[in-house]
Image (tube, rainbow, N blue to C red; front, side):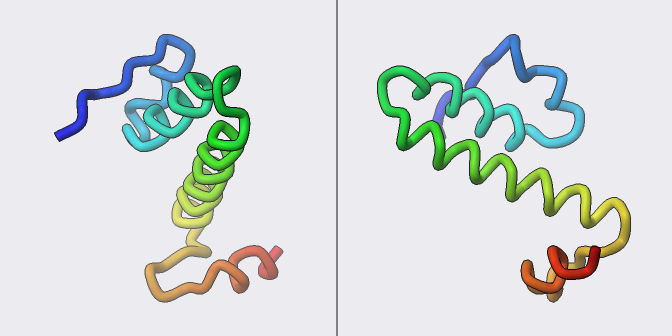
Length: 73
């Protein structure tokens, strides 16, 4: 199992989902050394955040396609 990623900047996201903390911390870690990887992690973070918001407002179910979520509003 991989060690936990710790980030003071994003620890406030931990109560919602540890995956938020992990992706944000990785994006921050790779910012200077590997900008492309940093952007990929930011995209994953954004997708997870959008999915979480959609689930909280009732627009997302496991069967819902991404396209339908983004076209609903």
